[in-house]
Amino acid sequence: EAEIGWNDKLGKVGYSISGNISDFHSKMGDLGGTEFIGDQIKKKGSEFNEWYGYLSEGLFQTADDLAASAKLGSNQKVGDVKYKDLSGPDGVPDGKISPEYDRKLLGGSLPRYLFGANLKLDYNNFDFSLVLQGVGFQNTRLSGIMITPLIANWGHMPKIIDGTSWSKYNSDEQNLAAKYPRLTYTNQGVNYAMSDYWLINGGYLRLKNITLGYNLPASLTQKVNLKKVRIYGSASDLFTLDNYPKGWDPEVAQSGYPITASYIFGLSVTF
Image (cartoon, rainbow, N blue to C red; front, side, top):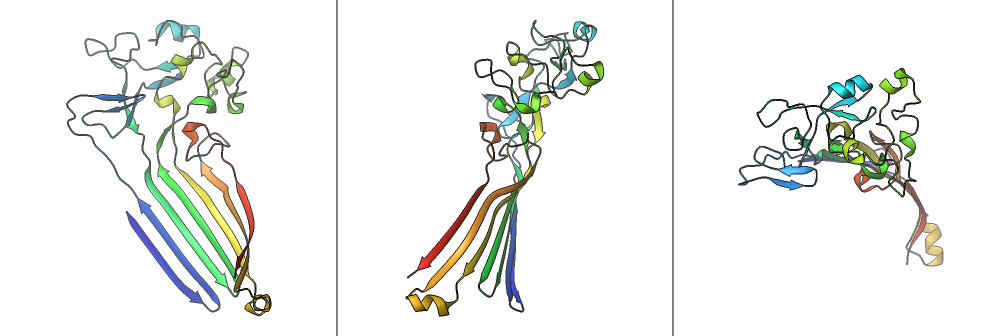
């Protein structure tokens, strides 16, 4: 990890700027076996809590494609996610998708290149601060209420999948461009199984906080026997650059929390 900072004055303007970045990469040694943690794995040669799942090949577009391809279960239909047949009991593709032979390491789940930056300015009685924070790269899985339809008593439908899913009512061109599989509740275990289809770069840049303050002149505060009076306004989470569906908090998106901005206006008095 590394951190650098500088503070100085330009005439009547005082300033300070600092930044930091940290990173780590893990590789598991011999654990005497394999440990599965949901859709993640620990085994020799893997990263710590690495994603483990299927490789995808888009969506099934036609009945002929479905009939000629390996399938994960017998209920797959046109419009479902298509998975790659990697291997079988004899070490070669066997015409079916199975968790024993067709899952592989998909990359680490933990964040890489965590960074932050701070800027502070002061001029006469004014002060200003800005905080940036982010993650350079992270294999993040889209899941849960962000993308899955009909999970709340058949009634929940994420806005982002409306009009962007495969449908028998679409044209062939629309289905080729569809980002999400057909809308179904009964086949969720297949379409939303752990695979690279649902992995995105979860890195982000966030304007974490911005604050502007003003200290009343001492000539005024002393008249009412006060040492210091500061008026300030602060805003948090105003702006984020990320690859998540719009509105989700990149820091806790996998838990299903939307991003919310907050605004604070205050008066600080020192007696």
